[in-house]
Image (cartoon, rainbow over all chains, first blue to last red; front, side, top):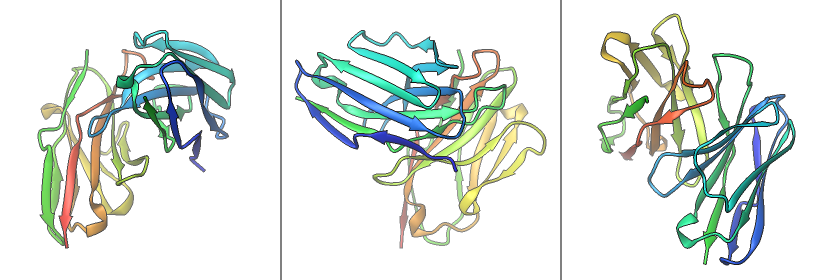
Length: 114
Length: 115
């Protein structure tokens, strides 16, 4: 089973709202990722958690705040977003054990910021 | 930093035609290589991957890819495409030594199959 689940599937929020995206995997993976994908573009890495610790932050604005409460769960807290933040937000996970990592992606949350 | 190039932005083929999508990367060290597919309205799915060993790797749905180290290439092939192969295809590279978690994607190739 290589399933990564994400909720919600769709989200519409205003620029003053606070919302959260959730990602879950039960494959025993120890690395989890957030990507942002604009239409007709490749995914862009935002954050990487390795063994529940933030290991990579690709200079993402502070209005995006990741959280990894445990090894199966990854959240992305959103606050005061801009319309240009509208995109598909993808979560991925991988084994986190070595140099042959394969990332498995969830279906994404399609976010619209008004 | 490593980069990945997919020179074919949009490829249009008829059913049963053969397919080859190009992927080149820029990194002189050891790499892991991947092809992902994104069907319309669906999430990224792993088609195939190369870590080491036989440079010709086979993936799902009849796809294969060949790693040619001297050309820094990892082209995707399928001998006979079907209408259901219509999708966006992304090549991705993990350059070992730059952080094993970092996956760099190419810009993608949109494949349209005409019935």
